[in-house]
Length: 202
Image 1 (cartoon, rainbow, N blue to C red):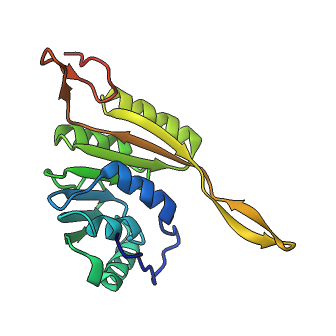
Image 2 (cartoon, rainbow, N blue to C red):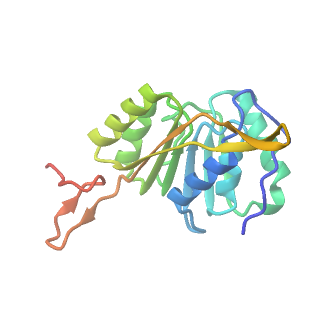
Image 3 (cartoon, one colour):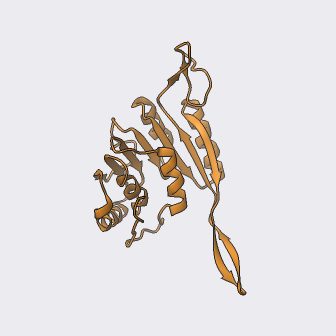
């Protein structure tokens, strides 16, 4: 079991919630030989979580002040980090590695170009989180157009609080999660199967 992540330094955008990170982690299924790439590190919550599991981590953040927050929070979790971590002040897809095994998009900026990079470099696992319904629709279509889509997951987390001697709940905003792969599988005839389960059109 991984130790809890400490985030003593904050950014205005806030961290990816721990419950959401747990689902992201299960979909990425990072192992000690994996190279994980992240677009939009912000507070570094996902960066740190990945660095506890993967062998290498490359995290991009276009805003220098947020990258500094990532760096400070990463240092605060140094004891639990096992990966070789590189932080890059860059706007994706510029700065993304060509040898990543898994990719996480924490925002929707330039996401189509990032997905093109994922296809070109054949990234095995791609996860994208979206909080707005309209963007989720656009992202789903973009995943489908590139034969990336494996599943779309929508979930919402609620936290209990005391109200008049009993327990009520505050709900976080829903999260739409796109999960896919840029590597193809083959059927029993050796024909390629698209990531969404359909046939590959050549």
